[in-house]
Structures are given as structure tokens and as C-alpha cells.
Image (cartoon, rainbow, N blue to C red; front, side, top):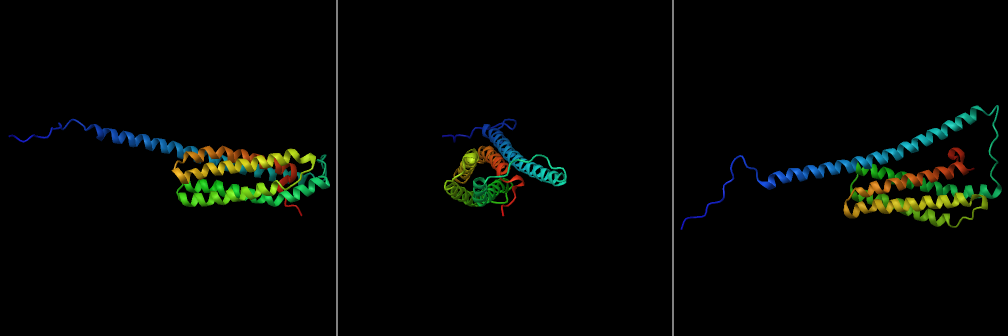
Length: 209
């Protein structure tokens, strides 16, 4: 009985899987490039906004210093109750800002390959603990009626930070960097709320004495 010969593939014919694999790889590569680009652009935008706000604050402070000879009408000073609330909130505020910066830079360092997923998870978890403690401490404060809106806005900011941290932590579980894209707008919104509270209580974010 004659042995069955293997089917021959002509030199000019490509095997179907040989052409499919490069196409699939190209699509995956393009998708990853888009995701990474979106993450880095979003995080860069957050940092840019923070830097612009800081520069604007310094500019306002400098202008105020120059115009002391002819001062413009200033806002009313804080009442005793408002001042007590501002002093009590300041150490909480300092910790929350530290947690937010730590989490933002953790995202950036992860995307540029300076840290791995395990380290990203550790840094995000450290920020989550800061936010949880900050919320517990914030809820013990009793703001005067004039600062109820400020108090609520600060609580909203902390809860947004917690949501963003939970989203970022999912990267450790499933390795999908899209979670960083979802978390970035929450970080930005929370940061805006902190700026609003800081403007109301600590112009220029001075440290209360």
C-alpha cells in the first residue's frame, strides 16, 4: 500500500495562521499603545492642573503682598468657630494631599515601568488607609453652620479618592491598565474639591499657627 503523502503547500501560498498571528499581534499592540497613551495623557493633565493651580495661588499671594500699601476690601476673617474647624481639618488635609500625590505618582511610575504591579498595589493600599482614617476623623468634626457646605465637599473628595483607589487596585487583580483610565477623572475631581476647600479656609494653603 502506498504511503499517504502530506499535502503540499505551494511556495507562493501562505499558511492561514501565519498571516493571522501578525494581524492579531498588531491589533493588540495598537490597543495597548492607545490605552497607555490615554493613561499617561490623563495623569499628565492632572499634574498640569495641579501645577497651574499652585502657580496661580503663588501669583495671588505675591500680588497681595505687593498691594498691601493700598489693600483692597478683604473677605471677612474667620469666626472663632470657623477658625477652630479650619485648624482641626488642617492635619487631615495634609494627610489626604499626601495620599493623593502618592497614588498619582504610583500610577505614572507603574506605566513607565519603574514599579511593578505588586508595588503599585502596595502604594495604592497605603493611600486607601490614609483616606479611610481621614474620613473617620472628618466625621468627628462639628463644623459651624457657615461651613457645612465646605465640610460636605471635603467628605465628597475623600470618598472620590477612595473610589479611585479601589478602581486602581483592580489592576493588581486582573492586570488591566484600563482601570487607571477610569480612576484618573475621579482623582482630578477630588483634587478640585480640595482646592475649593483650601480657597475657603486657607488662602495660599498656609499652615495654621
